[in-house]
Length: 232
Image (cartoon, rainbow, N blue to C red; front, side, top):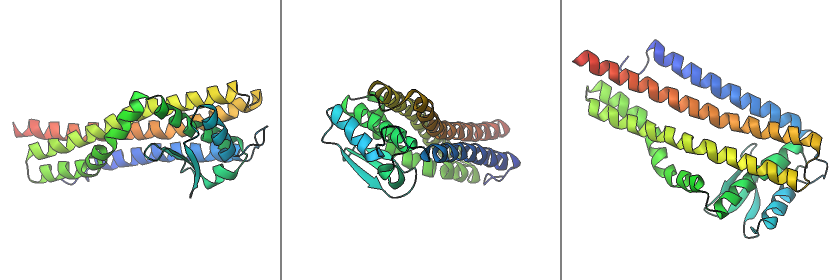
């Protein structure tokens, strides 16, 4: 019990694994389906990204391939859009949607989108909090020192705050991507629904992460609150 091996903890872990697996499976299946469909303009992800960036005054932002699948991201430190190898070279509808999404982050950066800057500033502290938070909680419970455990809870609160900031950042990047794709003629009417499906599936992985962080935090808070009541 002290080390979190209670039935409630096991159920919590299974729940988080289930929602994460469901979100990832949905993304993989949706991405795979539209990866088989070529976009009407027959542009690769790299070509679309370069075109969007140049059109938005971001010729200084590089577009590079990165190993793996669904490893696409924008690096604000080096001002680089990195597309997974399948998306970089593929003219698929999935590649087009993902490339536009990552360009959406680059545009956010250029415009000084506040939440993007806040998220970047939170990363170092959140990495420490999410890694050591549960350990401090278990350590505090084991030694019966609640103050140590509550410091761990603060770390988990930071992780949840990071997810709370990430969600609007990702949703905004997807909204920008769809507007750009539609207004600049990258998509046909039929393709619009497909691109939206890809971006929605990607967003669900962030929603699942936020739910997992919230449930984990609530579990540990209830555990500590219950322990505090029993000690009174």
